[in-house]
Length: 90
Image 1 (cartoon, one colour):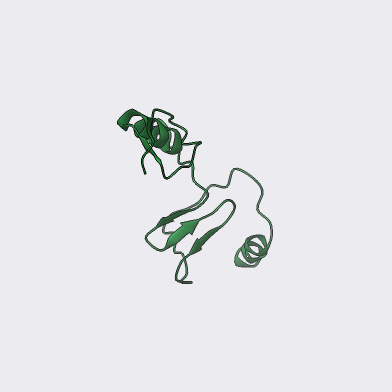
Image 2 (image 1 turned 90 degrees about the vertical axis):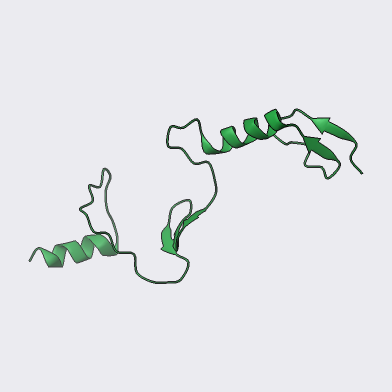
């Protein structure tokens, strides 16, 4: 049973009895995807088979990720990539 229309753009009520207005939906979506500045506010994102989580880039199928261009790391690199790079330069 619908009990009210909501203008709350944060959807804090989390109710099956409240219908959000068009403006509330627009406000909520805008807050989740940013204002066009290239921001995406989600816990996980899948594009094709590539999945990006908080600190991992993987695939949903387990296949390798091929990167066809050079990468400029702005911070340190540790673990296997560092060891592989050491042997490739030898």
